[in-house]
Amino acid sequence: MNKFLIAGNWKMNKLYDEAIALVDGILNYNAHPNVEKLIFPPYLYLNELRRHIDNQSLSIGAQNCYYENNGAFTGEVSADMLNKIGMDYCIIGHSERRTIFGEDDVLINNKVKSCFDNNIKPVLCIGETLKEREDELTFNVIEKQLKLGLKDIPLEKLSELVIAYEPVWAIGTGVSASPEQAGEAHNYIRKFLVNKYGNVGNEIFLLYGGSMKPENAESLLNLENINGGLIGGASLDADKFNKIVEIALSID
Ligand code: PGA
Image 1 (cartoon, rainbow, N blue to C red):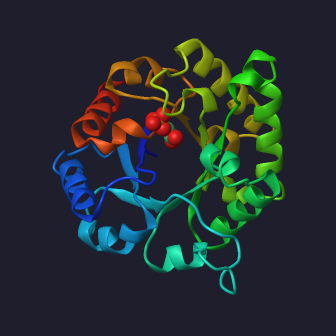
Image 2: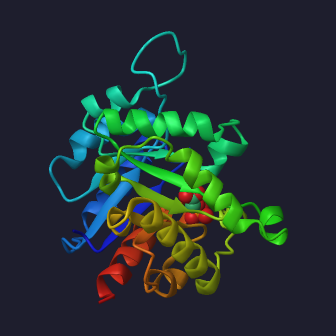
Image 3: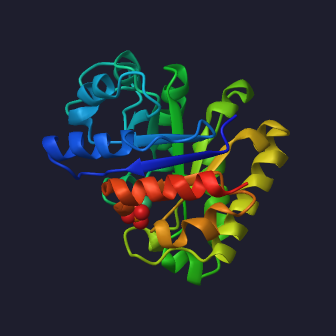
């Protein structure tokens, strides 16, 4: 089992040539097998980048999918289609999908199930807004999103699941959660998973997301229940992304 998963969520960024250059910049840095590197480029480039990466040590996934396999769903892409072009992962329930595109926990749960049905590893994103944190609802929100997002998922699939804790107030703001805040949330998530699923709960990778960058990666990745990062802004720069990978490598 890898020790860390370092993932870049490119969101709706990079033109075609820039995307190729960014991947090349990431491939140029040789990571140790203990750290899995993963990128989530825009849909448009997935097939091309999958071939470009070839069998090199870089995983790739989509930023979203729909839960039906095919049909009259204009503008959507299915987990089945992603699987057939060799995608490894898919982000599900990112807070931008929840807030800008109105995704709810029921839809998110259907997407998680569809990923499992199609051999795509889902990265389920959860996290509270600033208002919810100020109202001391952080743990309630986390628990509700976990319960609903993971409803009826068979136990044997769970070791393939990745969860990203991304406090909404830390995403794209430059202000990450402090190690105390992140550690507390991650410990809570781990406890929830172990209580619900037993030992499998210990195998689920927990990523922190929200303004992770080279300057704060070490203090976050050093925490017991943080197994990696889901990185937005800093993943758009190969040097910064590689630096975070290097930091992960340096942690015993
Ligand atoms: P950020 O984004 O690193 O730019 O805060 C993280 C994310 O939204 O996954």
